[in-house]
Image (cartoon, rainbow, N blue to C red; front, side, top):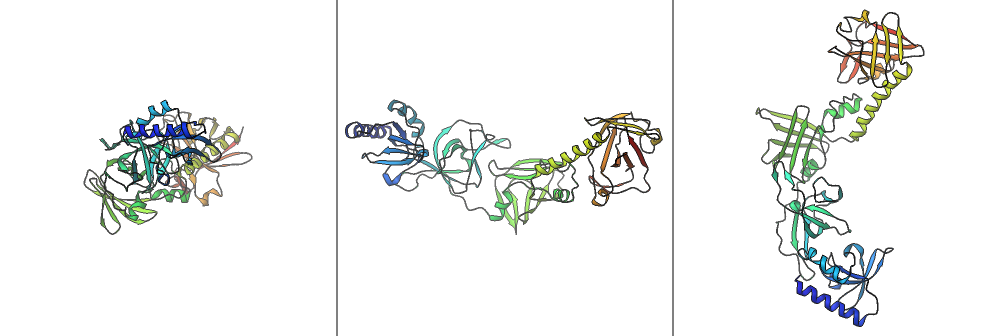
Length: 434
């Protein structure tokens, strides 16, 4: 809209209001979204008479003096004449600019920064209003900046926020014409299987086994170990205990039945099911690897927190039951609340179980779990890490009314982070409570 048209409209409205209308004007607002049924375009300035917080509408006037109800979100806050003239230029450049969203789940943020809080997630194909351009943090794809600008946008339910234009199709539209001046061509619909692949984070297949069996190794069950395609920034990440890679990619091609090759990077994805994919990755050695990934139904943070709580509570149970345990043959053990311990008089266990270099103090923890068959006879596994001793020492333990029973687990069979079978003829140690 041209400035002279704007000021002419304002003068006409002022004339109507002050000569033919007795209602008092509370202010003037810029229209943020077209109202075609009343021939009002985004960018028009109209008088506002009443604000209803109950109905969430303004009662405003049209050029011919008709009073209509307009949702609050569709107008700027009413201001005095001189004040609305000051804010109008901010909206003028994009008065008729709308956009169609290219990416499902595209974030709308509180500030023009890619890490700012999300206030809304846009749907693919959704139409939004471009309010004005802003200055924000550069969005990067690896080391390369993405093309686009930050815009303050408005959704048709009244949500406002900031969105980067890389995944938007901007176009000009007004109430008297169809969409015009489309600046980005429409893209084809995404492959439905590829949409499943890009929806959310994929975790290593072994996560399911660890969770299902209760064999929780917190060194391996780490939420940062995953495969993810960030559609917003066109970034692919592959993070595993021995692989830490991140690439900028430029799209994909379907190169086989349920197989997708990501352009310009050494990654191929094979879709197996909605919960299972295979990632074919070729490292610097040139040797391809097949990595299996799954979707986790459980809340991973809750699983990890539950295991951390189990370990802490088990140790505190040992501490509270003692904290001092005495044996005439194997010395005295004192557990401290912070996880440290002091054990003197363990000479009979040297060097078969405890190294001759071990000091009498160190750290104790409960990190291993028990198989179902062993959990019926033992309360857990206590791990001692003596100062100046390289290896850790593990004992199955059982608490009773008189004290503590430890069973040497040096020869026990351990699967991952779980003891599944006792050793053959293990040494058993009895300690009484002090």
